[in-house]
Amino acid sequence: MESLKSAYEELLKRYRDLTILYSAAGLLRWDMRTMMPPSGVSLRSEQLALLERLIHRMATDPEVGKLLKEVMGHPGFESLSDVERRNVELIKKTYDEATALPEELVAETAKQRAITVSVWEKAKAARDYEPFKPELGKLLELRKKAAELLMEVKGTKTPYDALIDIYEPKMTADEIDRVFRELKSGLVKLIDKCLSSEQPRTDFLHRAVPIEAQRRVSRAIAEFVGYDVWSEKAWGRIDESEHPFTSGYYVDIRITTHYYEDAFYKSVFSVLHECGHALYDHNLPEEWRYQPVGEACSMGFHESQSRFVENIVGRSHEFWSYFYPKLRKMIGVLDDVELQDFVRAVNIVKPGKIRVDADEVTYGLHIIIRFELEKALFEDRVNVDELPEVWNERYEKYLGVEIEHPSEGVMQD
Image (cartoon, rainbow, N blue to C red; front, side, top):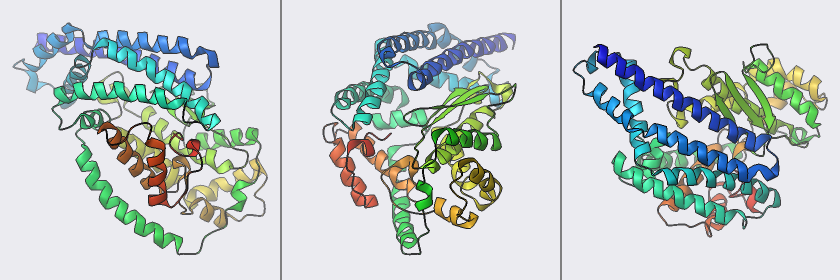
């Protein structure tokens, strides 16, 4: 048993080192999208490529394979606790995925991802898909190569399923198709029913609010739901980026938002959404830090937590009965708007072009469109040249909205 415990502890030690390096890479990506000067992208892409190369070497070290064989083949393996056995299973999954991919492919993908994000930000601001298209195409081809290699080691039916398994373990495109077909049918009926009822006023949601006032609102809302940015033991911070996101690990989890002077509500709900992600990460069991079981179990579960805080909490009458007086005082443009009218406005069901601004009912159709187009890209039924047109057609068909330029279409996320 001593040899089993010793080998298990060595596996955990190696996984701890991997996790720390992953968190360092995440910090570089956070900086790239929040603080890095524009000219830094070439250096940052090289930094990330090298870091991913080093991570890959550690993850594929033959010694890890030997340790896994020793632990899993030991007569006492079943005597390990459920948590210990699950740690071993997840380390094996990480090892199998890493050894399936060549180091050069991993490094090239990291470099190309950084370049693609940087080009996307500029192209989105210019409302021009053309500069972004070739970079997206390069990244897509790299992911297709990885998917083909992962399909073999994972034993999935398609390359796309191999990628899905990374983010949503054991899920397949066929199963998602089945769920989404049923969901789409129900959503369309529900949307029609909502649109046929009396619509609330929403004009006051577009009254001009200075960005600095919106920043104060963001901090106050974040603190209220438990995201600590102020105390001596603060573990969060709020910054600004083109697209809101959450990044970090356990005691250093950072969120971003985007402010619009004529749409203050957008940052309110993006902050609530990102706080949901951050609260989930921060409240993972401390005793499992640096262990596979101490990580988010899937992207689907992660998104359920962000949507819970954004919608179930953040759009509730109970939430606003407490926070609305504070919001009124902080932004100074809602003195003539009653609580009930505000709550109805932020719960309006209205098909729109932008996913992150979507209401609770229409949001699902935005996700369904993305899944259908991503699947088509990996099955070579759509290419990057055709993507904007197909995107626009799908939005008109499912949501009844007309996309006017790529930045409110295919380049919005």
